[in-house]
Image 1 (tube, rainbow, N blue to C red):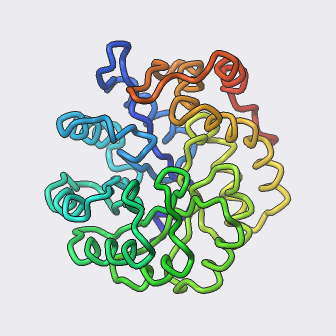
Image 2 (image 1 turned 120 degrees about the vertical axis):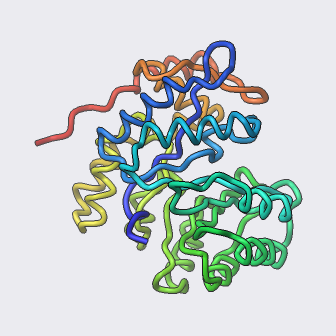
Image 3 (image 1 turned 90 degrees about the vertical axis):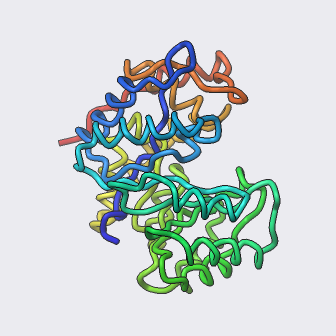
Length: 294
């Protein structure tokens, strides 16, 4: 459980200009994150463009990250979908060597009701080989997992945390007030991490941390240590970048910043498309974090 306090990075999958997986760039991204304070990695989540990777490519990404990581940081593997039986099969057949948990998003497109969402997680809970972090992201799934549903799911034995990205602070507070004590709430929204941690979240699974690892991990650590004034000032330092990377699609935004930093090509796979020229210029100007005060 303590492995998921702090800052997790939802890793991108770098591509070469021909759109093939760039393993060298991926290893560089991993090393940059480790060197600058990241606490754990999420592999093959939405930010990793897992929806457009085939099975061989997914295994290549897993192998590359494991080799680069060298067991230094905990790993979480993204396995989710809108076909419950397929999610269960993927959990049973995935190469989970070296992984500590699974991140599983609420079903998308089908738009199940709240009971359907609960039953989906109940079914995978009965079949998972690892603890599960559930993931509520209505902007992508088309449906919100209410705090009541998340609290019900939290009672299922292998469920250890929720990545909460509804953007609804009232829902966050209701969830905090009523969840089981041992069930963790993790921010899934970079821009709201500070207020969510003030309400009781234990950290974040982040995208902007690719570009601002020193600043953002310091902010999260300050929150965990109760240094709220320091944390607030650090959150405001990353806020513009955290908002800009999502302004024209993600992970297109963060890949511009990583490209400016010399870590990977600015390439996403269709149906994603690079961000517009105006935003790209802004992102390049924001790519490098400022030194932290001594």
